Structure formats: structure tokens, C-alpha cells
Image (cartoon, rainbow, N blue to C red; front, side):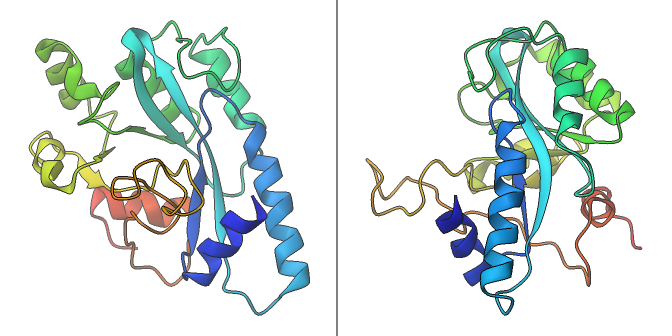
Length: 212
């Protein structure tokens, strides 16, 4: 964890979202590790950690819930409860009893933003029934979506969603991954947001195309 955060800061990544599968447990650990790094080397570039979670919703579809960086990690516990997730924290194959559209409304009401994850891959919402997908796009509850293949950004754009690229990092570097050419690590895939300061408000403004 310390190595991952140090790598992000050295690459001048200014913000990062912790989104473990159906769990809040990594958020406080990441924040504690960041404080340790800051104490040891105050000259490292700053890094803002946003709390979040990768939800497994009805049908096995994945979506990211992201909240303001000032929120406590317990916000994720509230999300999981309201989305009726009764499974094992950290397991991506156990499913909440709530649709993507309904979960997007829950996350919005809690002050967050729901982002369908890797929509063009397994467990992505492009696999929804076309009628459900049209309903989700028309609901207005989703304003951005993560694509794994930047050649598929049009799949998000044509539904009115801002396409995002995230690392979805499962490796510290691509060198140790089973398939280095396809692997993602901190800094290999990211979305640029132009802002003097980093906050959830600025991220949401970026996704909705507003100026602050």
C-alpha cells in the first residue's frame, strides 16, 4: 500500500479513489499510509484520497460509488446497507439486491456519484437488457461511466455519460503482472481533470461540464 501511494505521488497523480469490492476496509488503511508518507517526506507531491466502493449489483453488474474526500469511510457501510448487500465484504461475486439504476439513486441521495465500472467488459452495464440500459441512460442518475478500452468511449458518450479511464489497478507495476501488455497499475490509465484544487465538487463539475 505504501509503495502504491508513493508511486502515485511520484507520478504527480493528484487524486485517487479507493474502491474495493463491496468493502470499506481499504479506505482508512490508505489514508493512514498516506499520512505516514507525508510525515516521512513532506516534499512529495500532494495526493487526495476519495472514499468509494465497487458495488456488485443485481445481475452481477459492477458500479463505483464515489464520495467527497472529507467523508468518513463509514459512508460505504451506509451505501452497502441501503443497496441491500448482505454478502461477504471484499467478495466481488456476491450480489446486492438492487438494480444499477436504483443504486445510482441511493448513492446520489447520500451525496455521492455512481459510475458504472468497465462498461465494455464482463460485469459492465453494456451487458444489460437494452431496455434496462435505455432506462438507466434516461434516468439522469448516471453522469459518467468507466471504459476499459479507450476505443469504446463512444459507447458512454452516446448515452450522455462522460467516459472515464481508470487504472482499476490490481498490480503495483505492470512488470509483475501475468500479462504485462494488458495489465493496469497506478498511473498507467487515468483521467485528467484540470482544477487548481482537487475535491469531489470539482470532479462532479468536470463530469457535468460545468465551470466553477
